[in-house]
Image (cartoon, rainbow, N blue to C red):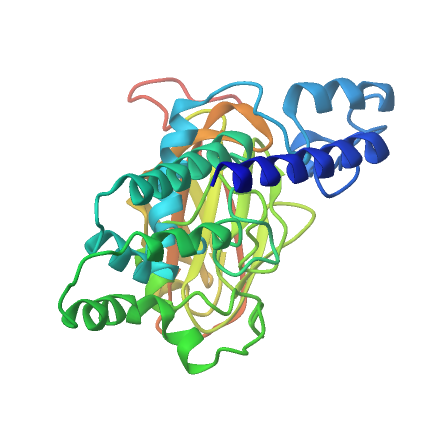
Length: 351
């Protein structure tokens, strides 16, 4: 075993050394990949192009390297998402691994495997807090796949045959799409991920820390201090303005975030269905319908709070679901932070 470990270490050092010598990076990508998004601004537009290297040093890049700081809040959310995330959770998509723990024989070799797997997962959360699952081309969590066999080798005790049946039954709500069509496209026709079941979309948390998730096929945008991302195939964001277009059947799910708490959010929906639309994810303060337009002022519930890939400071995340009794048609949604109501007796603003 010592010779195997030494040989593996030698091969790893050789590969890393060649990558570092040829591409100035120790990963298999051969070179550091630098990118920017609209929340960060664009070189030569929002800031001088010469400032780009400094911003990369401060905020990080796609190169595999240790995070410059440890964020306990972000790490705590990443642990939740690692276990039960809607798209990348280990328990929904790798649930049979629990059979290895059920039949664990606590000898030194098996405990070493368990500790090594745990240390590897912890390292992923530290090194890649914004992408610990493998990126947009991954099915569930490809970084975990090399660790998956370790959990099977943990098993060393006899257990009832009912355990595999129970594991399959527990995995049914999450794995049914893959079981029914294992060769289905990674991204389905509606722009969502093909392996994510309706139960997962409804019950499991969306991974707000992860930068590569695009289940609706639309990019995130930032306007007026609000970062907005569509989470449902029926919702599409526009590049300009704060409008979203709703088309098709199903709930319109929306994630938005702010650097400061959002006490009141104004939604304006132009749709023939306006009067019958319900909202989940917050408490409705005001509701008016006029000329086919629904205006809502909502006190949204906090969905999560942590740093993200565009900022080292914690942001407040909120999630709203708009449900209509029929498919959306010719519907346009706009949202903005609603002003605070004027205090009773206060003078009105001059026209």
